[in-house]
Length: 203
View 1 (cartoon, rainbow, N blue to C red):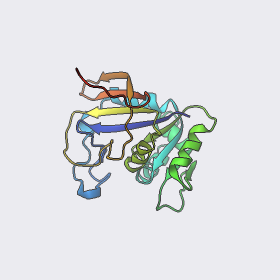
View 2 (view 1 turned 45 degrees about the vertical axis):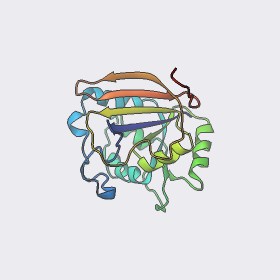
View 3 (view 1 turned 120 degrees about the horizontal axis):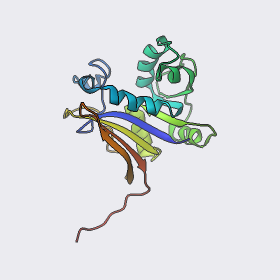
View 4 (view 1 turned 180 degrees about the vertical axis):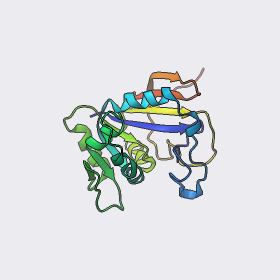
């Protein structure tokens, strides 16, 4: 399965707390909810297209808890996000949870990178998708396990907060497969893995 990461991110690379002031206050972060004024119909359609391609989800502990507190209560079978989250497998990476009770959810046991490699190699249709999950993404980046990034870049800078590409990110080359801007100024990018980083000298 192809592993894709979908992330809301600011111009200065922050991905922390996009959806609300109390979503993620780690480190005293008080700027949550920064995407709300810019989330328009085009942005929603981009997200729907991504969920149409999913085969299974890979989630960090915090994102799992946020999703599990909301999406099981959205029971409309025509909802493009809830219908997939409530019906498809959800693999949860956590050092603190002992159990998960959302239907279709399972804790990853043992080494997370090794478990993710097994999930990627397993037969199945659709993408293995990561949404949110800042800490988990850092592990995936350090192990060079991400095949594709869907980056929704919002026209704000915060100057503080958890960043998508942290200090442990493995160097890599990417290719831009699509990009467009919405009416509210959100730029929707899709990047695919393109092998090792190449270097040169400007003559």
